Image (cartoon, rainbow, N blue to C red; front, side, top):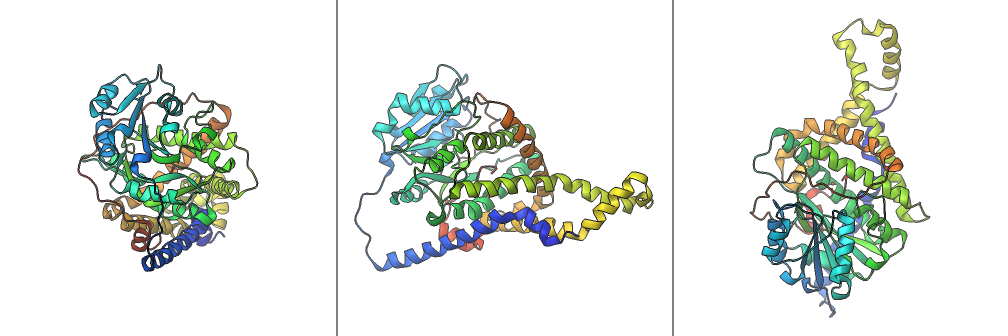
Length: 447
């Protein structure tokens, strides 16, 4: 008989536990350093400022959202530092970017996000002109405090890339499905970033599988050593992160204070396409980078094993529940020729109470933790539906594996349906220590 804690371990996994403990160690070290720093004056030294940062925004038909994104970033960095590369746009993206005052170039054809970034960096000479390049999605709005928190990560000379802290934008009038999809992503971000990402980017155990491309920063002196646009990959950010670790270029920094708000799909078709694209991109990158004898490869191996086993568990779960509960509505079911054998096997290993306690309870705890950390009680309204969303994610994730291994992609993109983000600035995120204290120490796809 499979105990409830065995199912819970399959849902949460080793990664959750190990990196959660690493995150607590990091938090304790951060609080200790702050106490020591308060007792002595700061050492003199040059720190990177926004004047050292080039912002590069790749855009493909982003007329609905790019004006707001440009306004947000231009309020934080000099306008001359903001660059837009239009990758085969056929709408008003170029005109809007020009009108906002950004430096704008266009590719000759739709070459994909990675190709557009590589071309723009070369044509604009950004590596020779700036110390840091921020890669920013056209639907992302950088919040005040991002650079103060993010650039401080570069005080460690070993840090070559900084991952932004993602928050999902909320629409004003979403359907029930839209609210469910967006809140599901919000829950993933809230837990994944506070547990996995925060622990994975501790300087003593630095190994994270992705620096998400929605709002990330790289030292320009490492970019020439990163192959940004290898053939056959559907997305670039997994590959860039793998290159950092496998080529031993340095470490990745992350802080909950470097916040940027991005859009997540609010219709089921776009959600499936984006999630599958991310999953295919991960497995394509795994295929491209053979494992090595280092912490990054070990972390990645455990992550992938748990990703597959957890997905299989959620895929089988509805069938198990169906077998367990059919006798409640058809009393003669245990005597059916074929069903009887399946029922005997399932009841020998699984009980309904084990499923409820081992899977339902941990999932609800995660929802409560995310609602508290994000100060969003409405996440609790969708708690009964999140296991179904995890089943959807499992089907997409498993179906992406053969696609990634058997096909090659051009990297060309099609933006999902966009909606205007409310213009009112959301509250700035607390720093890492405060966030973890409030959340009890407690996010996807790409976090």
